[in-house]
Image (cartoon, rainbow, N blue to C red; front, side, top):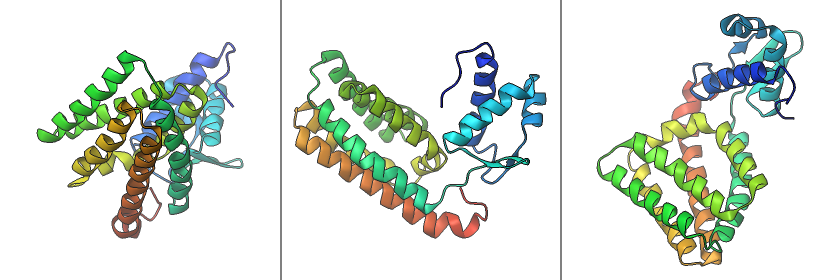
Length: 228
């Protein structure tokens, strides 16, 4: 399911981006009811493109439809995190291997520069800059791997756990540990060592998964009745 290319797609896209942004930023909380009539009134558009947008967001895992009663924001579970990271470990491991075979000088230079920028952001404790460069580094690696379908899957998965990701950056010591892990797989990619790049990426993602699970089990779920 994708946004249509018909006449109403611009309104559907407007509603889609409006709701998705608010879910990812937690303006719409997990479990919160979303009504197409209310969204349509806020955007001053008809309900039809809003319904289409909400159905797409349901298909992508951001909303849960309630027959005749609208939609609710999906609340992530521990099982969801495992499923997301099971796919990420396999797919991004393969993509790191493919990236190691990339000979594009511009992309290779961008990968190294972005890693350097992440380290610089850590030194000045600029979590916002670090997060921005982290996203850019992974975008560059995906470009180096040159598999657009796999990249779309990874980007969709990352959107689904974005609500958790933002809070993780602020954790004491996480940026430093992440920089060490990023350095390991980036250096392997730049050396052209596909086997090691894949293993380092898998290790990074499994470490990240475990850290997320520890936080959710011990610090979040006991106080989040509606999930995350």
